[in-house]
Length: 336
Ligand code: SF4
Image (spheres, rainbow, N blue to C red):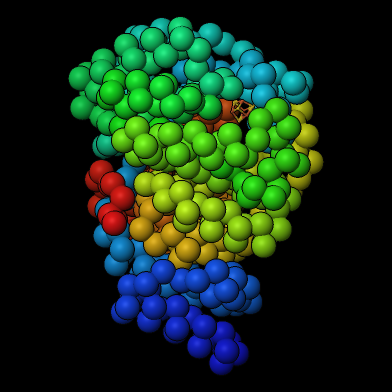
């Protein structure tokens, strides 16, 4: 049996989130994040209840396309697309329109509701802005999919133009806590990332703001990150786990233990009860046989197919997993 204090902590969190429908305070979340390994399945079960109660049972599927790969001038230490590191990723120019449309059609055929066009750039220049503003309505009209974009740091005017051009969601990750960020990126600041996130919301797009766990951050910094996200209130939080890429400064880090990943999925859900919490890169490597457990630990969305520079498992395997779990597929927006 877990210690009585641990059971009390879980029961108090349950009452607060499910009966009184109030968010947890940071001290409560810190206690929950520190439960022994043997209690992680109970933590996950609570997070699943919270997900069902706050967001419903629907799972959202999204496909992402790396429309311009590699050659990025930034130095994010986890990223194989940075031109500063000697990685196997070859820089390629912006894909042509037919290639983007074909990828979007393949995504739609899987039952997805969202398609994200991702570019490896510091931020979009005018040429990229024009291509995006041309592509977004073409993709939407050809497939019916909501179109998301991830193109780095935006200024306020760019955010407004993308919103007016029909971009449904804009992805810009915080990646990690403000206090850890300078150890991971030196070519831009956490504050610049946060500012882009604010411009996205002010312009009326849904904000998709993800994290990358397993880069050497402490538990306290993961909790700090949850608090920073809670303040930004994104519609969606993609959860990536570090897949150490050859040639990058983080290539020698070891992936998180699978149960540790489940612990943090659950903790993110308990700290962010109403967000779309999406499985993203690195889950196959990190979670291995526990991928279905993540779906019952607070996750309610998936990227299916391949990631930007790494291969995901087959979409069929994910669709089978969702069928086996009895989880319906559909579109989601932030509930509250
Ligand atoms: S994470 Fe984005 S901004 Fe950073 S190096 Fe990679 S592509 Fe560039």
